[in-house]
Image 1 (cartoon, rainbow, N blue to C red):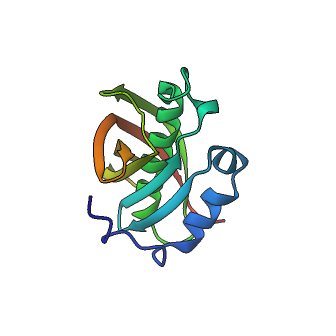
Image 2 (cartoon, rainbow, N blue to C red; image 1 turned 90 degrees about the vertical axis):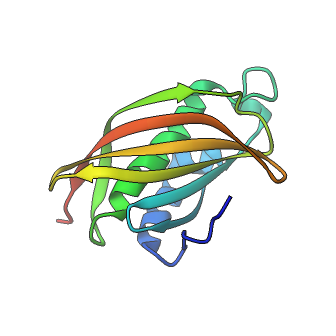
Length: 145
């Protein structure tokens, strides 16, 4: 998978905000990087987020997809903007098992106050990438005060 379009230098405050969230820290989320309207976020697979010691529970996969989709929408906004999820729908496609999950988000469209975006979540083991889930999300865009 090509990770070169994503940069930790693009919107560093967005990554810092995600990394500062207690839920992100507990899940071990790491922002691989962002591009204009795009995001890449990874999460290690641990036994305590699985239902059988190896396959990540679907709702946890959905949380990662939500982070990726909504951060992609935020990455399409000027610096300082934030976003709040208003809804998301996840379709699990394959077992989310492996070493880590990587989610790629991409904005689909936006107005001044809301956006729609998508995310694909891959289960990764070594060089093998398997599409595990896909997500469509909506969010409220929040201008800086």
